[in-house]
Image (cartoon, rainbow, N blue to C red):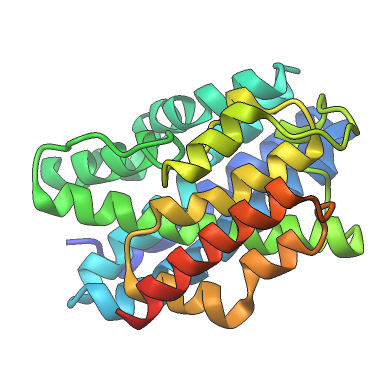
Length: 260
């Protein structure tokens, strides 16, 4: 059981982790604060989903822990000046390693530890693999959806309002108006596109909206439709036939999921 005391220890460990990084690497404070803020917003998204998908407070607290700690590895790798693609590729594994060394984690039942590890390890890979059981799969899907909702929201705000910090994965991308054929091909196949195929900021925007193909729950599609994330990100793209066509393809997919 995850008691109030354990949950407080989790929150304290989370805050101490970021405070330690800020003290050691003050030049990167804004980036650490952005990752911290993202994690807290994913907690809020997770609880919205958990209130629909989970039954007990204990289950909801597991979802909270997953969200709190899922991106610690991103902050850790950023402090080491790793390349953006490396941070994106490796941060989930590093997050899982970090949480295993935290005191509160050792007090959790073995099955809960596994749920947390599997959720965090698999939150950012392009396709969720088959996990050991349905419970692990449910929590992993919940974290993936909650994470994507904030990625949609924060990315749009950066594109439209220059609010927040530029996503790390986009730092090395060029300003070309071209888009990757591999990314377009993935979208037409109904699959999320890969970060590794990106060359331009427009590619990144298409990768973002292609994430709709990997959402898991009707409520997530509902939120996405109500907030018009796909449309808002599309509005920041150049209006060329190939982009208009894939946008319509994704928009129709989301609408069908929402009403089904």
